[in-house]
Amino acid sequence: MNIGATSVGGMINNVKAYASVLMPGVVHMRHTHLDEHKFISGQPETGAEIADDLERICTNFGSENIAACIVEPIAGSTGTLVPPVGYLQRLRELCDKHKILLIFDEVITGWGRTGSAFGAQEFGVTPDIMTMAKATTNGIVPFGVVACKEEIYDAVMDNSPKGAIELFHGYTYSGIPVSVAAALAVQDIFEKEDIFNRAKELAPYFQEGLFSLKDIDVVDNIRGYGMMGGIDIKTDGRPGKAGLATFKHCYDAGVNFKATGDCLIIAPMFICEKKHIDEIIEKLRTGITNYAKSKKN
Ligand SMILES: Cc1ncc(COP(=O)(O)O)c(C=O)c1O
Image (cartoon, rainbow, N blue to C red):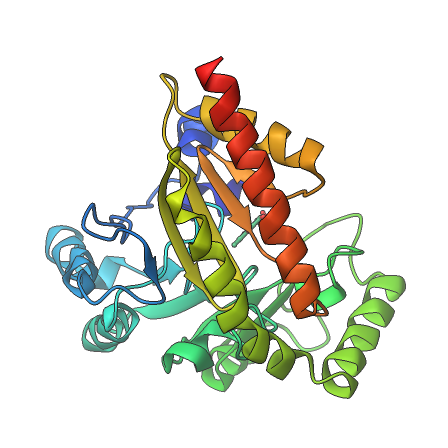
């Protein structure tokens, strides 16, 4: 993650590690995970009021000093934190009330992961700005996208000198033709292979498989939505130790994913069929069970 993303993101260990070089003027809201949210597939019914953190921040700092509120529709790398029912709607209301831009970081949730093209559509909340990356090129070559409301676009365009670069920056690697070609090819496949609907149709089967792992004693919690899942492994002394050890056992069992802290982040490919989901779940069961056994030995 770059300094900007680290500054506004909720990866608190990263925030701590780079604290001295992060962007100033960032205030973090609380995450939406409550202790009562145990083994919930889909959106938790409670917790929407956590969005009122934004109201408090407006009171403390003055909404005229706040440019934007940025959230992931489903927080990905912090452990698949699915927004409580009404949470994103409440943020939208507060942003409108205080004239603050709402930004959805759809780097993970974008392009079908929730079962809709974007989390914005899935949850029925329209942000003012949206970021996209990963699946834009199927993660093969770097390519980031920012979409914004027309009035924001016009404000940037109309305020720059004619013919000049409107959003000036100086990256070495910008406007890479192969990335654009990959992004266009991926768009084509999304459409031809009806990828978003495939994800939507497979999601309940994946979720069922994911939650079938709840009987393993080292599994502390499971969260999931669409084609995203998070499995918390009981912390073993130091946070992150159990997650890494379980990841290694799962890798040996033949399944690869990202572990963040003690959470295993499971995000199957959209071209999966039911038999592949079965295989993923079976290998997860083997890996997690082997980790549990290794602890007893
Ligand atoms: C949701 C999300 N937003 C932002 C980033 C980081 O973006 P960048 O690499 O542009 O800093 C990541 C990185 O994995 C991410 O998962």
